[in-house]
Image (cartoon, rainbow, N blue to C red; front, side, top):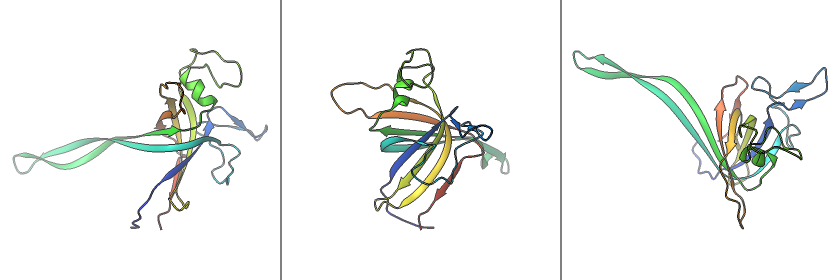
Length: 182
């Protein structure tokens, strides 16, 4: 086991569901079953930067069931069985993009120029790549997860917007990560 004192800074990149990458017949569509090249080195051409991430909070959720058995007559917990898991991610960004306005104003699809507010769900799906660096700028953790997320309500006033994005990690066999504390 490696022990370290760490301050973690996160860099986030996003590949939106439905984005077509490549040219037919070798084109692929970003989905839960396909993600852009994980071996691609920065700068990522198929991953859009989400800008400055000032905080990042992963929240694991575990559903457990106690196994109660007589020992010999009184029932006591003898085991705990995990019946379900989920991972939620929350982060704040100091830069906003079209994704921010699309989600917040419930646009009916990706915003390029003109759009219709109030016609969409606000949910944004795709691959999230998180790179985490320590206080010496050494990369310590990187992972890719497929998410469905939404920006939280945001008061727009005479100060810098810090956009809060909450994402639910959805299962995909393509999710991956690499941790290096050594």
